[in-house]
Image (cartoon, helix red, strand yellow):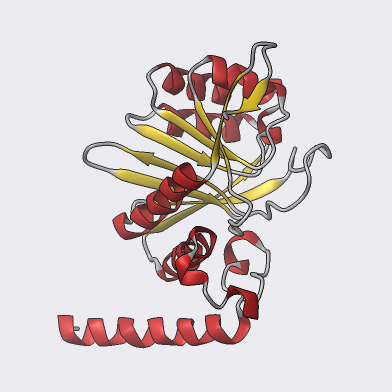
Length: 235
């Protein structure tokens, strides 16, 4: 198949997926299991707001993830040695790491101590960034003490998936965990659960993920250690 035909085929497939996205607004369910909220009239001027731009970036990320062929899939059970080895090894690779999830309750177990240590190691060299919605975990304090930069995900960001991005001078790699990330912390969710872990080195997809995280850095709040040793939002 020549390049022109390949390109035409890709455009047709892209158009089909875009139509599906517009009609159902549910393409993200293939990643996180959560249906995207339909935009309301109050969001008509979304192009001028940062939260809406983040939503667009999230939709682009979902679309490219859906279309991407360069994806490796593996099933891991949280709390297992295989799960710990996988993430500890991935976070230990050369480069900066960016972790995006509602909270880090999934790491609050001795079985995942090695993962926490790898993140702290990156934090000591200012190469670890964490994005969360809830920060009342005792592990947050330890990560801040180690130098991990912790940000609060802006309220306007509707993208509720768990992902990790690793970047270096010559490569990028992305992990998306195909599990819903919508529950409130405190219910020990996910422990012992099998999850689909998808990894990709597609540079366009990784670039969109990095743009989304950069906007979270710029528009969200950053945490710091307070005088009492607890985490607080930087004024």
